[in-house]
Length: 142
Image (cartoon, rainbow, N blue to C red; front, side, top):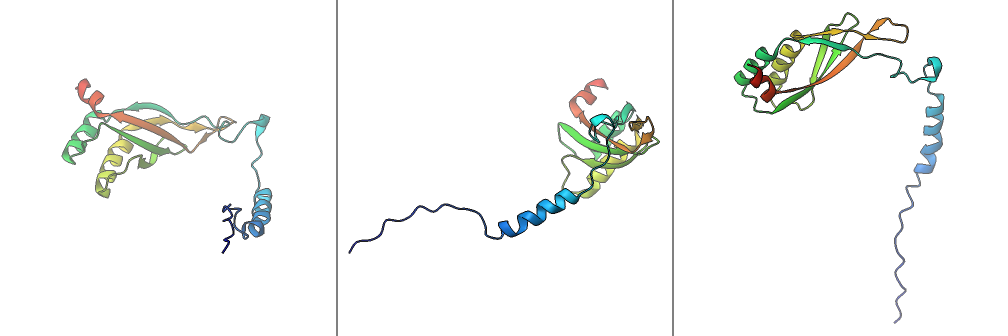
């Protein structure tokens, strides 16, 4: 008995893709795009928040030792309001115990000062700041 040769399987996508693709393209086309001056992008038109100073190295070292944080460095993002005051904090690598995240963010927010972000007209706007602190470098300064 002769068996037919197997036909190689080639995935050609879901038949539902052809139904949803035109709807998705129409939705994207209908999305309003903000007007940009001089052909720039929205992000390029904002000067980010600028760090004036961080005065909390000693406090961060004490708090991290108390909480038994044994990392080499800590990355974070601070949201900064139009007055240059940090309003929110998020650690890049969060700790399993949320109270550790909260305590470290409290120190970071309390001891950072900024010049606010500026829009294309030079007006102060909300912005953000991304930073990274190395514990070894901070310990060497003491």
